[in-house]
Image (tube, rainbow, N blue to C red; front, side, top):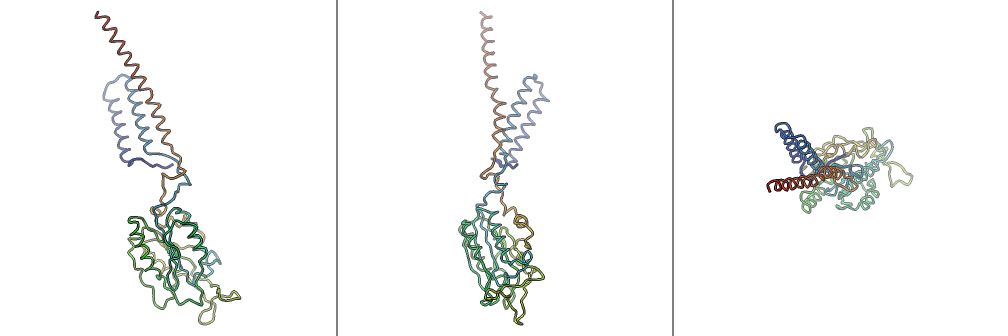
Length: 332
């Protein structure tokens, strides 16, 4: 059960305390006939029921989650050759794990706007911010690791400038709208020089995570240009092995101001989101579609208690008029 108060709950709680205090003062400090004490208690009970109804208790729909419609989600995905390494969930390709996680996050944050940025030797916006979940699914499904024949080395911060530009554009268009970033890669830097620092202020990122794929033992990478289905070779003509660099990924996480999460395929999407600032990401709405409202039951109970009041006052008024008539008759 969740609450969706119509006004801030501290005001409701304060009103409830005031009602209880007034009843206690009336009952224990003022000598009243028992019928009046009963009436005071019933009226107070009705007021308390209405105050509880104002908290709007209910059972949330859709398993407790609703669409996060005021959120911009940026996926930054490494598509360099090393993401073809077969060490995800045993012998699966790293990029397959990324595809699975991106779509899982999109499902959990349904209703948000999504953008997909990929990088290898360069960075590209595969999909600008959009709520089109089908377009995101198509863009993610078509991702492929860079062909080693065209690889010229890649920096793990290659997408930094493009991400900064996209975040700035989103902030300018919708000021105050939260933006979260999910960076997915293996941390392997194959550029001639070391990775530059991400050129953005972490304060513009409201949540997200750096997702790491691969193992310390490493994995072989299939060579799509080899008709025999062979593997990528190193400069010594030996099968190359790519290993995850978690220290590099943690550095990126620090620069983005988000947690680092190693993805091995054993944990679900909810576990990952639980580490990725859930207060921002999984914005549970208590006022979404499918919610079962219970406040009306409390309001009905208050009505049934108070419905007798008009009849009681009418009875008292008739009795008062009858008493007045008798008094006038006695005077005559």
